[in-house]
Length: 334
Image 1 (cartoon, rainbow, N blue to C red):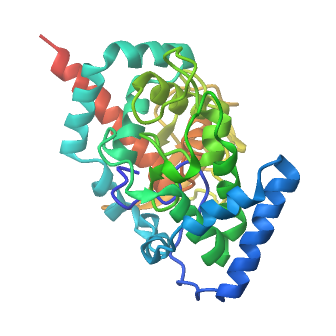
Image 2: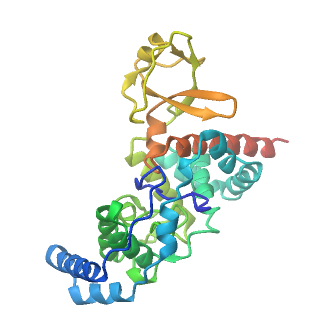
Image 3: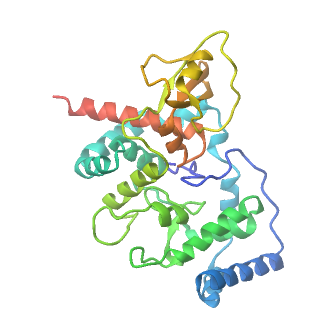
């Protein structure tokens, strides 16, 4: 997220509500956990346990990481969350970025079937187009969360392990040289180590993946992330629903589209766009500035949500991408 401190997930499923700060574990317990971690990497992946321990020994506990992860922006209601993301400045900057990099973005968009304005929006929301990729050493952030944040220690130990496993001819970076967000996300698209391993792509054909300096690599990686999570070319994302007075209540659930659209219509939720009645869909109701807003969301909304599990994030990204595309078209008009 313009990482304005709001990115606490970025492709990676952290909690979506504020949590109390945990107590700092006993140093002896942390040391034992680090030794077990290094031994597991040696046993399971053939790494040198001594070298792993040397990197961990150089890592520094960061209290600000713990502070940040317990204050997610997604705890805000939609009426307060949306104005943070969908702004005039963000829209104008996104349209300018789209125009300045049109050739690369159109090529990547056509190759993956992902709209260029959506790729641009992710880069703008996550890092302000590469201007704010994070100031933490990734090994510091992940070590802090892996050994000093019990609520998500399993997740972050997995990410820390993947950080050690990333180095390869296509990603030639030592784990203790990388910088990123407080959650350990890296590059313009804020990819966690596991997402780099699974989804990062070489978009410029040089045999390497550079998520900091190569826009083709960055854009291809973001687009591939969406495709890998079910993005459907030219498919719907989210449409505001009209709710009948006697509509059947549907409680909060998964963002996965599990209902045929026709079923939602029969239950009292309608849209003014004609789609295949069997299109998978679901409902999202948010606390808008003028009262509850109910949205029918589709597979592409779910794909965006794999970047950040909050429906607020997904809807803000989608609305900003629409605003950027519209502004770019206005700017290009004679």
